[in-house]
Each structure stands twice: as C-alpha cells, then as structure tokens.
Length: 423
Image (cartoon, rainbow, N blue to C red; front, side):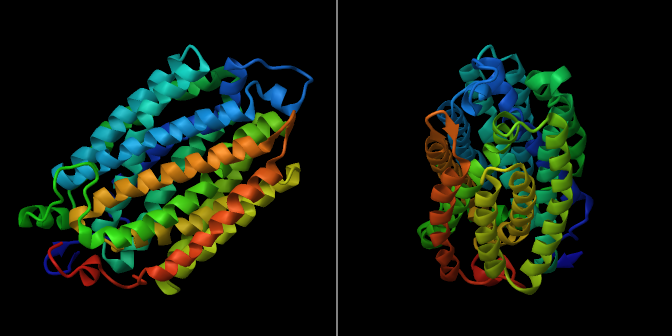
C-alpha cells in the first residue's frame, strides 16, 4: 500500500501492525502483574489479621500499598529517555530491547524476599515495558495512513489489554497454586515469544525518511524543539490528568476487590474475562468515533466517563464494583484509539518518540499523585473509604478536559499536513 509521496504505509491488519500489537501484549503481561497480584503480594509480605478489619486483612496498609504502587509508577519516568532513544537509533531495535529487558526484570521479581525488594526489582522493569507500549503505538501511527491509524492504534491497545487481562485471569484462577511468584515466572513465555515476533517488526518509512533527512532532535534527555513545546505542554497536561484517574482506578482494583470486599479469585477472573468483551466493544466504538466524530470529542467524553465510572466502582458494594469496573474498561477502551492516534498525529516524526517519552513521564506523575492521594484519603482509621477517595481524586481532574479545545482536530489528516516541514 503506497501513499503520501512514496511512503510505504500499511493496512491496520498488516503483519507488521500485528507484530506491534503482540509486543504490546508482552508488555501488558509483564507490566500488569504487580497490579493483578497486589493482594497476594500484600498478604505474602504483610501481617494478615484474620477476622480483623479490611485493612488488617489486606496485610499492608493503604498507605504502604499506595507508596509501593507510586514507586512503581514513578520508575516509569525512565521510559522518557528510552522512548527518546528511538528517535536516534530507530523504532524497531529500541522496541525489541526494551521489551526483552523489561520482561527479564519481571521474571526476576518472582524471587523477591520482601515487599520493598519486590517494589525495587519490579521498578527496574517498569520503564522498559512502558517504553515498549509507547513505541508500539508510535509504530502503529507511523506505519498507517489516516483511514487506518485509529484502527491500528486500537489493535495495539487491544494487545496490551489482552496481556494485562491474561495476568489477572491466571492469577485469579491459579493464585492458590502459583501465587504471585508463579505469575511472574510465567513472564518467561512472552520473553521467549519476542524472539519470534521480532521477525514481523519493521522500521517505519516515515522514520527512515526523517533519518535520511537528518532532521533529528539533539541527543539530550527527552529533547523536543521549541517549535513543538507549547503543544507538548497541552498534550502532557491532558495525559497527566487522565492518569490521576486511571492510576489509582486500575492499580487498587484487585486489592480492593479481593482484600477489602472479599471477592474470590474465580469471581475476579470472571470479572476480567467479561471486561475483555467490554474492552473489545469499547475499542471498536472508540475507533469509529475517532474516525467519524473526531479525536477531540471522543477523548473528552471518554475521560468524563472514566472518572464517573471510577467513582461508582469504589462506592462500596459488590454490584457497584462489578458494573463500574466493566464500564470503566469500556470508557478507557473507547478513549485509547482516539487518544493514541491524536497524540501521534500532533507531532512530526523527528520528535514523535521523544514526545511519547514525555507522555510516559506525565502519565507517571499523574498516576503517582493519584495513587498517593487515593491511598491516603481511602484509609480512615481501620476503614477503607473508596468512595470518598475516588470522588476527591477523580472528579477535580476533569477540569483538564478544556485542554482539548487548545488542540487542532486531526481526524482525516496526516501528520505531514500539520507539520509540512521535513517529516
């Protein structure tokens, strides 16, 4: 498929795009393990008081859990220089390297002798896997034309979702036999898989042309030229706000379900399986809305839906948890194709991976703020007040939706239309 002045661009279901989706799957499997197994980790390394309060039954306090998760999130800032490296040496080699080493650290975390050891070891792999997912989306955006871009980004998001879901399902069904250590050891499977997937990965023509033109950012930490910085601030502001919501909403969900509300592993696994259906429908809806309604309105509406569903999820009942979680997955999945295409279309090829790195950093800082706030607010004496924590943490972040108005709509447009200078 040739288009855009001789560039070789691909359909969304080309094997090169499928390869990127599989890399995202590997990243999701490795990265989501800490969240899915958090309840088991807390009970293994904490002191469980059987028959006590929900916080005592969790093994570790909400503050300890929040700080540990915040450290893991904060470590992802290392994804900034790692993603930026792809603007210098290429997308493919950086993508393979980050995924391999990230999964290797995930496997190593299985041998953790204590909670903080676990946090530190897992934190080494977190930035590598964050960069993997970011670069998979960059590749999907660069290798496709406008009519296929949202579909390709949706496919990559689906890959990440499947990988994350597999971790949660496996832990939910087999935690009594595998434990969290067994789940992390299983990361060796996608680690081996990368050596087969890499054969499908290619260097995007957009990057090859930009590299030949010599239009590079200078080799410094996260370099993005002055011409792009005002737009970068707006985009990272949105990413920060979204992560204030999704950070705690996603990270606390399994410890809340299993340790606070007492859901069994089987019910939790079923919840995740059903969420896969909601996620698929959300991705399809998000792709259609992004291409027909626009990137901006789809992103803004989905962001509101994520916050509202998050508050409902933590409102205190089993029914609210199960329904709210599914609606939250649907909202986040609807957001992903529009936001992923939007963020990559707004910048030229020469800085696109560096921008993805800054988005990782903004996501990390937003998630850390959300996790610390949620964890501190939720712990009221010996009671876990998820409703108050979600309301105070999620709703104020919605003020950032006005930032969408500061960005141009990119539906139906190529990056070269927005930045006509060298790609």
